[in-house]
Image (cartoon, rainbow, N blue to C red; front, side, top):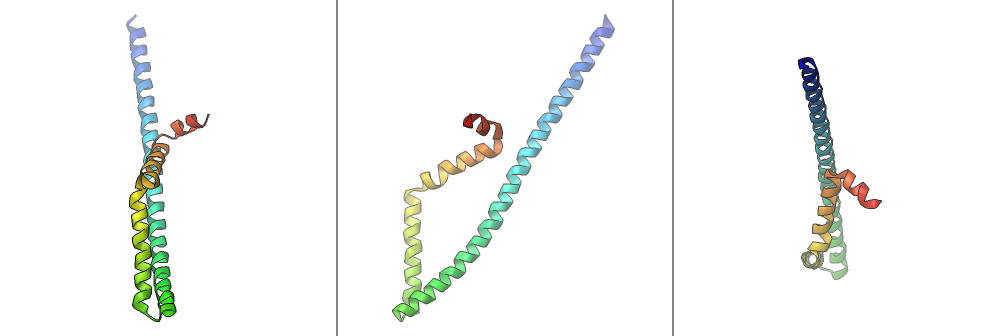
Length: 118
């Protein structure tokens, strides 16, 4: 009888070790997915920022040439960005909060997202 208990104890320990390894793998998978997406967002955001910066300069000079005032052109561009800021602040829940929550849930719980589609 003691041999049976020792075998059972050994099997239970092996089972727990395997479960722990599976949990570690899931955590590593989720962390690597989050890290990959974070790096992608940072690099894409940086490049988009540079594009927007140079397009803003071009728009400022272009509008300035139409108005015969470079300052007026840059004020128009600044006014456009101010208007965009107001719109963003008014609709930030719809634009940012909900999509970010959904994205985080789908990143951290991919099986939940798959179950939701069924």
